[in-house]
Image (cartoon, rainbow, N blue to C red; front, side):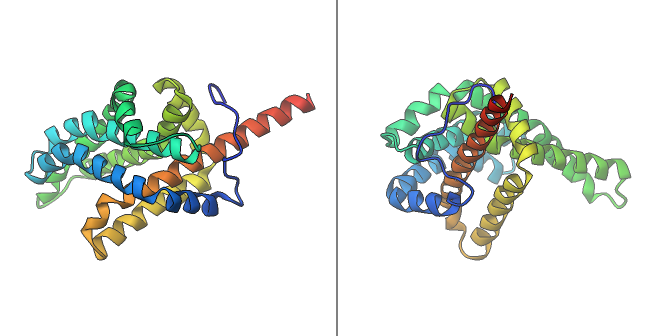
Length: 237
Protein backbone atom coordinates (compact mmCIF):
# COMPACT_ATOMS: atom_id res chain seq x y z
CA UNK A 1 0.00 0.00 0.00
CA UNK A 2 1.35 3.38 -1.02
CA UNK A 3 1.92 6.06 1.60
CA UNK A 4 1.01 3.99 4.67
CA UNK A 5 3.10 3.87 7.83
CA UNK A 6 3.92 0.60 9.64
CA UNK A 7 1.57 -0.56 12.40
CA UNK A 8 2.35 0.13 16.07
CA UNK A 9 1.68 -1.92 19.17
CA UNK A 10 -1.79 -0.38 19.62
CA UNK A 11 -3.00 -1.60 16.22
CA UNK A 12 -5.86 -4.11 16.60
CA UNK A 13 -5.90 -7.50 14.93
CA UNK A 14 -8.88 -9.61 13.81
CA UNK A 15 -9.08 -11.26 17.23
CA UNK A 16 -8.71 -8.06 19.26
CA UNK A 17 -10.52 -5.49 17.09
CA UNK A 18 -13.85 -5.36 18.91
CA UNK A 19 -12.44 -5.74 22.42
CA UNK A 20 -9.69 -3.17 21.91
CA UNK A 21 -12.00 -0.67 20.22
CA UNK A 22 -14.60 -0.92 22.99
CA UNK A 23 -11.86 -0.51 25.60
CA UNK A 24 -10.45 2.60 23.90
CA UNK A 25 -13.95 3.99 23.45
CA UNK A 26 -14.76 3.50 27.13
CA UNK A 27 -11.45 4.93 28.36
CA UNK A 28 -11.90 8.10 26.27
CA UNK A 29 -15.69 8.36 26.48
CA UNK A 30 -15.85 11.88 28.06
CA UNK A 31 -13.59 13.33 25.36
CA UNK A 32 -15.44 11.52 22.59
CA UNK A 33 -18.80 12.77 23.86
CA UNK A 34 -17.45 16.31 24.00
CA UNK A 35 -16.11 15.94 20.46
CA UNK A 36 -19.52 14.62 19.39
CA UNK A 37 -21.08 17.84 20.69
CA UNK A 38 -18.59 19.97 18.76
CA UNK A 39 -19.25 17.91 15.64
CA UNK A 40 -23.00 18.44 16.02
CA UNK A 41 -22.56 22.21 16.34
CA UNK A 42 -20.40 22.34 13.22
CA UNK A 43 -23.03 20.35 11.30
CA UNK A 44 -25.92 22.56 12.46
CA UNK A 45 -26.01 25.01 9.48
CA UNK A 46 -26.43 22.24 6.89
CA UNK A 47 -28.93 20.36 9.05
CA UNK A 48 -31.06 23.50 9.51
CA UNK A 49 -31.08 24.18 5.76
CA UNK A 50 -32.21 20.61 5.13
CA UNK A 51 -34.90 20.91 7.82
CA UNK A 52 -36.47 23.99 6.19
CA UNK A 53 -36.53 22.28 2.80
CA UNK A 54 -33.55 23.97 1.14
CA UNK A 55 -32.12 20.68 -0.02
CA UNK A 56 -29.63 21.84 -2.67
CA UNK A 57 -28.02 24.49 -0.40
CA UNK A 58 -28.00 21.96 2.44
CA UNK A 59 -26.00 19.48 0.34
CA UNK A 60 -23.48 22.12 -0.73
CA UNK A 61 -23.09 23.54 2.80
CA UNK A 62 -22.81 19.97 4.08
CA UNK A 63 -19.91 19.30 1.72
CA UNK A 64 -18.20 22.44 3.05
CA UNK A 65 -18.88 21.81 6.75
CA UNK A 66 -20.08 18.31 7.63
CA UNK A 67 -17.37 16.41 5.76
CA UNK A 68 -14.49 18.53 7.17
CA UNK A 69 -16.04 18.19 10.64
CA UNK A 70 -16.24 14.41 10.30
CA UNK A 71 -12.63 14.30 9.13
CA UNK A 72 -11.60 16.45 12.10
CA UNK A 73 -13.51 14.17 14.47
CA UNK A 74 -11.76 11.09 13.07
CA UNK A 75 -8.43 12.91 13.38
CA UNK A 76 -9.09 13.26 17.10
CA UNK A 77 -10.19 9.65 17.41
CA UNK A 78 -7.16 8.55 15.41
CA UNK A 79 -4.94 10.28 17.94
CA UNK A 80 -6.83 8.56 20.76
CA UNK A 81 -6.54 5.02 19.39
CA UNK A 82 -2.88 5.57 18.43
CA UNK A 83 -2.25 6.56 22.06
CA UNK A 84 -1.13 10.07 21.17
CA UNK A 85 -1.88 13.25 23.06
CA UNK A 86 -5.44 14.22 22.14
CA UNK A 87 -7.96 16.90 23.05
CA UNK A 88 -10.59 19.10 21.45
CA UNK A 89 -7.70 21.20 20.19
CA UNK A 90 -6.66 18.22 18.06
CA UNK A 91 -10.03 18.30 16.35
CA UNK A 92 -10.09 22.07 15.89
CA UNK A 93 -6.57 22.07 14.43
CA UNK A 94 -7.44 19.23 12.06
CA UNK A 95 -10.45 21.10 10.65
CA UNK A 96 -8.47 23.68 8.64
CA UNK A 97 -5.55 21.31 8.03
CA UNK A 98 -7.67 18.76 6.17
CA UNK A 99 -10.36 21.15 4.93
CA UNK A 100 -9.44 21.20 1.25
CA UNK A 101 -9.05 17.42 0.97
CA UNK A 102 -12.22 16.73 2.95
CA UNK A 103 -14.25 19.20 0.89
CA UNK A 104 -13.09 17.36 -2.23
CA UNK A 105 -14.48 14.15 -0.78
CA UNK A 106 -17.66 15.94 0.30
CA UNK A 107 -18.24 17.34 -3.19
CA UNK A 108 -17.71 13.86 -4.63
CA UNK A 109 -20.50 12.58 -2.38
CA UNK A 110 -22.74 15.59 -3.08
CA UNK A 111 -23.25 14.82 -6.78
CA UNK A 112 -25.24 11.56 -6.43
CA UNK A 113 -26.95 12.86 -3.28
CA UNK A 114 -28.08 16.08 -4.95
CA UNK A 115 -29.16 14.21 -8.08
CA UNK A 116 -31.24 11.84 -5.96
CA UNK A 117 -32.91 14.67 -4.04
CA UNK A 118 -33.79 16.46 -7.28
CA UNK A 119 -35.22 13.25 -8.72
CA UNK A 120 -37.43 12.36 -5.74
CA UNK A 121 -40.27 14.80 -6.60
CA UNK A 122 -40.83 12.85 -9.82
CA UNK A 123 -42.10 9.94 -7.73
CA UNK A 124 -45.28 11.97 -7.10
CA UNK A 125 -46.35 11.47 -10.71
CA UNK A 126 -49.28 9.13 -11.37
CA UNK A 127 -46.97 7.00 -13.50
CA UNK A 128 -43.26 7.01 -12.82
CA UNK A 129 -41.13 6.27 -15.92
CA UNK A 130 -38.60 3.47 -15.66
CA UNK A 131 -35.80 5.94 -16.33
CA UNK A 132 -36.63 7.72 -13.06
CA UNK A 133 -36.30 4.50 -11.10
CA UNK A 134 -33.07 3.76 -12.94
CA UNK A 135 -31.72 7.19 -12.10
CA UNK A 136 -32.60 6.80 -8.42
CA UNK A 137 -30.96 3.38 -8.34
CA UNK A 138 -27.81 4.82 -9.91
CA UNK A 139 -27.80 7.70 -7.42
CA UNK A 140 -28.24 5.28 -4.51
CA UNK A 141 -25.41 3.10 -5.79
CA UNK A 142 -23.19 6.16 -6.16
CA UNK A 143 -23.89 7.25 -2.58
CA UNK A 144 -23.19 3.72 -1.32
CA UNK A 145 -19.87 3.56 -3.18
CA UNK A 146 -18.73 6.95 -1.87
CA UNK A 147 -19.75 5.96 1.66
CA UNK A 148 -17.84 2.67 1.37
CA UNK A 149 -14.74 4.48 0.10
CA UNK A 150 -14.97 7.06 2.89
CA UNK A 151 -14.70 4.27 5.47
CA UNK A 152 -11.06 3.98 4.42
CA UNK A 153 -10.22 7.24 2.65
CA UNK A 154 -10.89 9.47 5.65
CA UNK A 155 -8.84 7.41 8.15
CA UNK A 156 -6.04 7.26 5.57
CA UNK A 157 -6.13 11.06 5.31
CA UNK A 158 -5.88 11.63 9.06
CA UNK A 159 -3.61 8.71 10.01
CA UNK A 160 -1.18 8.80 7.09
CA UNK A 161 -1.65 12.36 5.76
CA UNK A 162 -2.23 11.08 2.22
CA UNK A 163 -3.37 13.18 -0.69
CA UNK A 164 -7.04 12.77 -1.54
CA UNK A 165 -6.23 10.95 -4.77
CA UNK A 166 -3.92 8.46 -3.05
CA UNK A 167 -6.40 7.96 -0.21
CA UNK A 168 -9.21 7.18 -2.67
CA UNK A 169 -7.05 4.75 -4.65
CA UNK A 170 -6.03 2.91 -1.51
CA UNK A 171 -9.61 3.05 -0.20
CA UNK A 172 -10.85 1.35 -3.37
CA UNK A 173 -8.24 -1.37 -2.87
CA UNK A 174 -9.09 -1.89 0.81
CA UNK A 175 -12.87 -1.82 0.31
CA UNK A 176 -12.55 -4.45 -2.42
CA UNK A 177 -10.19 -6.73 -0.52
CA UNK A 178 -11.97 -6.50 2.83
CA UNK A 179 -15.60 -6.73 1.78
CA UNK A 180 -16.76 -8.28 5.06
CA UNK A 181 -15.28 -5.38 7.05
CA UNK A 182 -16.86 -2.85 4.70
CA UNK A 183 -20.31 -4.46 4.88
CA UNK A 184 -19.97 -4.81 8.65
CA UNK A 185 -19.31 -1.09 9.18
CA UNK A 186 -22.10 -0.07 6.80
CA UNK A 187 -24.49 -2.45 8.58
CA UNK A 188 -23.39 -1.04 11.92
CA UNK A 189 -24.24 2.55 11.03
CA UNK A 190 -27.62 1.44 9.63
CA UNK A 191 -28.34 -0.41 12.89
CA UNK A 192 -27.32 2.66 14.90
CA UNK A 193 -29.63 4.82 12.78
CA UNK A 194 -32.54 2.49 13.54
CA UNK A 195 -31.60 2.57 17.23
CA UNK A 196 -31.68 6.37 17.22
CA UNK A 197 -35.05 6.39 15.45
CA UNK A 198 -36.76 3.84 17.68
CA UNK A 199 -35.09 4.64 21.02
CA UNK A 200 -34.34 8.37 21.02
CA UNK A 201 -33.39 10.84 18.30
CA UNK A 202 -30.97 12.43 20.76
CA UNK A 203 -28.69 9.45 20.10
CA UNK A 204 -27.82 10.95 16.70
CA UNK A 205 -25.62 13.42 18.59
CA UNK A 206 -23.38 10.72 20.09
CA UNK A 207 -23.63 7.47 18.09
CA UNK A 208 -21.74 8.72 14.99
CA UNK A 209 -18.73 9.66 17.11
CA UNK A 210 -18.74 6.22 18.74
CA UNK A 211 -19.02 4.56 15.34
CA UNK A 212 -16.06 6.63 14.17
CA UNK A 213 -13.73 4.81 16.59
CA UNK A 214 -14.65 1.52 14.91
CA UNK A 215 -14.05 3.08 11.49
CA UNK A 216 -10.58 4.30 12.42
CA UNK A 217 -9.51 1.05 14.06
CA UNK A 218 -10.84 -1.00 11.15
CA UNK A 219 -8.68 0.99 8.75
CA UNK A 220 -5.65 0.58 10.99
CA UNK A 221 -6.24 -3.17 11.15
CA UNK A 222 -6.66 -3.76 7.42
CA UNK A 223 -3.71 -1.51 6.55
CA UNK A 224 -1.55 -3.54 8.96
CA UNK A 225 -2.73 -6.73 7.27
CA UNK A 226 -1.92 -5.34 3.82
CA UNK A 227 1.55 -4.22 4.89
CA UNK A 228 2.22 -7.60 6.50
CA UNK A 229 1.13 -9.38 3.33
CA UNK A 230 3.35 -7.16 1.18
CA UNK A 231 6.33 -7.74 3.47
CA UNK A 232 5.76 -11.51 3.37
CA UNK A 233 5.62 -11.52 -0.42
CA UNK A 234 8.89 -9.58 -0.61
CA UNK A 235 10.60 -12.04 1.70
CA UNK A 236 9.41 -15.00 -0.39
CA UNK A 237 10.89 -13.41 -3.50
